[in-house]
Image 1 (cartoon, helix red, strand yellow):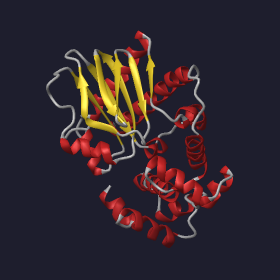
Image 2 (cartoon, helix red, strand yellow):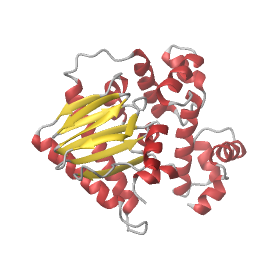
Image 3 (cartoon, helix red, strand yellow):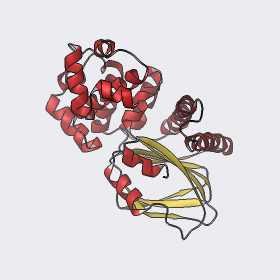
Amino acid sequence: MSSIDKLIDNRDFFAFHIKGNKSKPVFSPQQQHVLANKSLYSLCLIKKGETSFIINDERIQVGQHHLLLTHPSSKVNGASVTKSWDCEVYLIFFSIDFTFKLELQKDFFDFTKKSLALNSNHIFSLSTSDAANLSNLFKQFIHYDKQDGDYIFKPQIIKSLTEVLFCEIARLASQNIKNIPVVPSRKREILANFYLLLKQSFRREHMVQFYASELGITPKHLSVITKELTGKPAIELIQNVLVEEAKCLLRQGLSIGEIAKQLHFSDQSFFGKFFKRNVGISPKEFRQKA
């Protein structure tokens, strides 16, 4: 199974490597379906040659040593990808939920807020050294991602490499965005601020009302914006982050009662019902299968 196919199993981050072979399709029909139906950010690094995509009905051409960033609302037509015979491309897709699992400091999200708020896709030109450094990080990630599940320390290595990769991309993107004379979209700015608040407060604040109040808008307005830009209402985004944190704590071996306490549920029973409603199995059953 390829990395992109694993998204069918609810994976929210993957990376892969594309090389030459102009006649071979980049994505299978199943993979195209995944790209069209999941709310994902994408990052495409052109190491060599050139390639192009149709994004929101517009063909985007990207050349060597360039980095393309797209938003979840930017639908990539998987069947439209064309590439030169000598191209070499690294491509990753990820959901915003994925970034919440990483141990990134608060200033990372403050640092990247402007890029989250921008309304359009962006293509950044990289120096030869920056492109080489970034491609090496992609290459290492893909190498370890392909290892068997029993490869010792694989999860920790993948997590560490991902954090380095994200920080490096954020650094390069922020350098470029400083030079873009674009006013952030008001809706995307609200969404970016919501993500920042969510990262800081989701363990203790579970209600849309709290976040809307902090942002100075109504809960309905916040949910309309998140639904439009991510495909999900605000309450679902909050619950997704809570569920992923609960899964992480269960894997770490914390007691169900302690997890309920850390995530500020009123009691263990209420947490258990919340978890089963969103995951389909109880916390105890999840731990046994993990």
